[in-house]
Image (cartoon, rainbow, N blue to C red; front, side, top):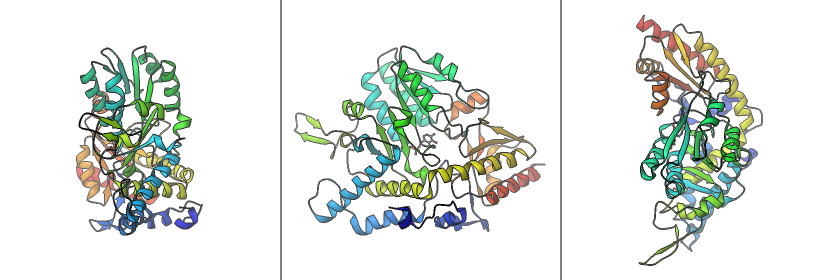
Length: 415
Ligand code: PLP
């Protein structure tokens, strides 16, 4: 899809982009919805909704195994989506893109198919203190299965990875490093390329959790030089239930699948099965075809709007939100790294985050409150929960003003 066919001009026009998202016209409690929960899941533009509907209206059948017209249409749509995702991630080879349910499944796939067969007792998996549960629990499971040990690299007081301490955690037994590209709880952008250099120098492979990077920045696995990269479509304006794992082809080809079934085989007898090559060997069963089509449409949309234009808009909005929220008396910011993406996490002194979220909801403002699936991070900060406003390409300064008015109201009610 080209920019022209999507009807998007080059200059970033937030009001025009808002019109792409029908759900943004929703009223909550009689007020316009202010949707600031994009890190949990972003809303979907017409371009994505239309791509999914057209697929079902015009092309749907099962993929790969049919000779009839619709089977070919569906296969072409699914495999074209893989090309789009591969190009968007900066992959050199389309065989390096495995469609999965999302980041969580991608990390579990690497944990079970790459790590589990390789690791031995005493080997180490290195993560960081700010990881989402989906980048902790799969590794804990593999540690349980293999006798490997989970090592955690610490943050500084702004919520940045301490590279010196990270380097000290890397050792001869470190086999895998797995880290977020962007923290969902703090917004910190991690120095992935630097981490990869350090890890590769020790012979470790690097898995990157790109769930929170995909909506905000140009992805480029070749530039990062990582070994695995995971994304979820639903955080990047695409549908739920679909995501991608990118992996170096030589690694994927050497990995046994951890799920078996149709689609992933070359030949099956009752005695044994020969697996297909990657990526098919990791895509057992009927895939989420419409999801893949929707994911590709979301990446087309991001490119048509322009990732650089989105980055600039969001950076300006983040600076405005950070400043405005900090001016509310009693606000304690959580996560103050200079290099951040679109997340403002905070506490309101003396008021539970859940009360903050509920009162804001009464004013049409949707934020997320809780531990953000990062309980170990919360524990290390000595807090149970934060309120988190997370921004997307369609958010505006007026919406930040509505959030700040809402916070004033929270304080009035608890005065
Ligand atoms: N990693 C990070 C940093 C996230 O923010 C999330 C979701 O919130 C995930 C992983 C898991 O993504 P999904 O639930 O789409 O698999």
